[in-house]
Image (cartoon, rainbow, N blue to C red; front, top):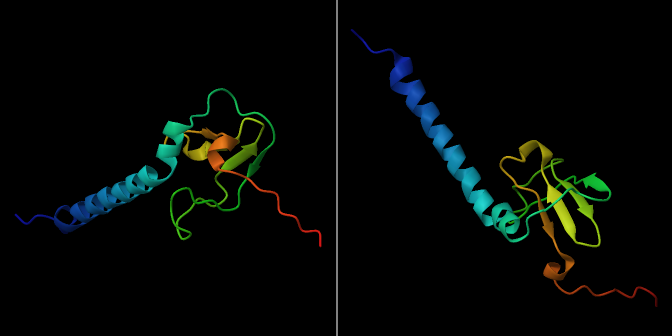
Length: 110
């Protein structure tokens, strides 16, 4: 009795693609979003105006990012970021302004 091609080729290749995709997602999360979410968790509801960012890359490259997925808001407490569609994978975060580094005003008047 011959084993069907499906069992010999399609299932192992599909499993390998699934494992590779899962590994790539975990690598990307460990570099950017998850360390920030661990350091700056969003506690409580999101306050203020929230906008959808057209493009954002947190800890990644310019080639890999989230397009039209990230909701951002700026309040006195800091910058809040969340992904409503992927909340189970990306916990929401609020980065305080003090953690963003020193800000300097640019004087454009000449």
